Image 1 (tube, rainbow, N blue to C red):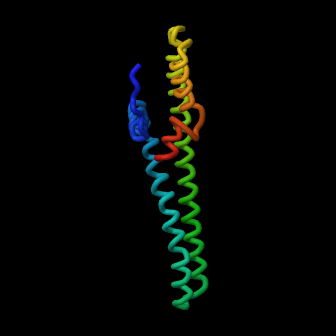
Image 2 (tube, one colour):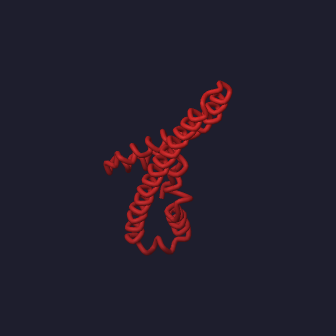
Image 3 (spheres, rainbow, N blue to C red):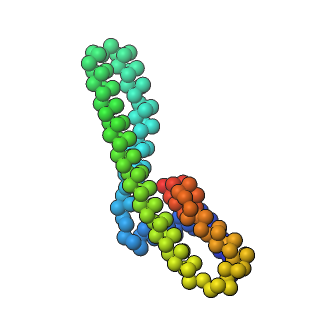
Length: 148
């Protein structure tokens, strides 16, 4: 059995290829939405104190300060909600991808010749392969969590 060199980028490219072959383009759109709205939150957080200080220094009416704070708070709340929706949509889809991959590997495992199951090296490699499918904090799905 020939060993392949598995890197994070190799696995990420393979998984993105799986998304493309299944024609799941909406996942890419949700990744983009999540990226834009989650990236907007730190920018808004940096500008809230600046706007408040500018309004206080320029002696503007308190209602303008309150309206600015309300607007920025509502806008940041909307960004946070959309970012969370995008993130959890993707995470749910990635869980489904992991389960499909697990079913594919499990099918192959059931078709193995009995002689391989008595080989300790093969059994160790099979355990490592199945451990990549065990949870969402390691292996197959963790690549999605780490990169996207």
